[in-house]
Image 1: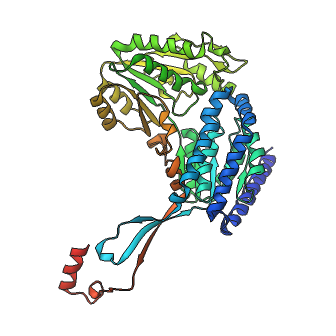
Image 2: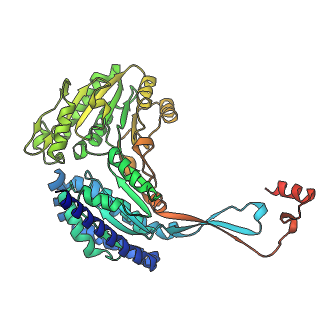
Image 3: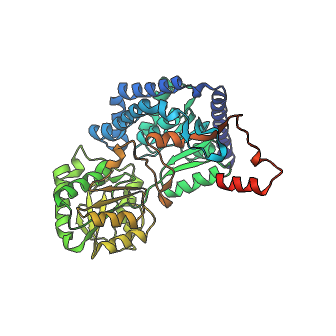
Length: 468
């Protein structure tokens, strides 16, 4: 058995080596540096999304029970908008960027020259198996890189579709899809890439970073964590509840930036719970488990994980499970123990704990006592509170009076901080992530004054001090 495993691993390593060598040869030939080639690849991906929308939505439904509208808005449409924005701004992003030049270097010009990194590895996630694989790829190809795409094996239908369609539309000399699980991913990570982009959980993120460190490969890690949602008494309760429900239960809660728990001032707790219950019913009906707009859990193991979080908890609402369909109803838990698994682990599912606090200072202290989250949500009409929360908490992104909507703005970089991730992308931030901004200074031969050259004198030093 051990010999078979070693042979299998060797085969995966050989595949990874062959794929990387072929892509490196393409990059060395300079093919991907041409802006027209990059535009062609982006338009080809655009055509893929347009022409195979139905197949894509069917695959997403097979993997995650996603309804057509959610698949189009959060996956296909998101990517189409990203491509459109990138094509519009690509020429400007790729131009040298002038910066000022100090007097001591006059006459001269200084600028940053964007150049592609080379050959990059992009490892996607299962919860948004198309968007989280192809959005970083859009940035990578826009910046002029070759890329290996590794879709999540847990979203098997989407992975198979990507593996079939990408070679039919994109340049196979510059883009390769590698399917598989742990062995295939490990073989890829053992290779020296010019950048590794990983979306997923903290545990695997550490493995990715450790593997990349062996080659001093830079990484972007888009992880997750427990994103808090703070509600104070000045909020518009009905709208707040509607937006919390939308953000929490999209994709059955399997979203890295979904509200993980709610902190609410104690006096508002009963009214907020009632408003959220009402909104769950308004959006998903009396029985979400049979609602076509409501998604399923990715697999039985994750469903069991979610069920374990509810052990010894008193449920305020929901909790029903359909094991055969791998579904869990929207579930509310009020004031769970702070040291319970529900409050320690990232939930990544349709359970929402709601915790009462006496003051907003207590809420901020609660947040700051835990690892920095990927997102933080604040519902308030109090500008002073807004300023206090922004100044006294840390998160990858903050959205005030809504959930997840910052993702719609390509001008806002998206990324984590601390254990929720490192690096960012979307829009120009993505282009820059997959580029090296090469520092360049060009000087003229004229006016080559002698005061900077030896032999030095007190007068020369005095002049230099003034110019520095």
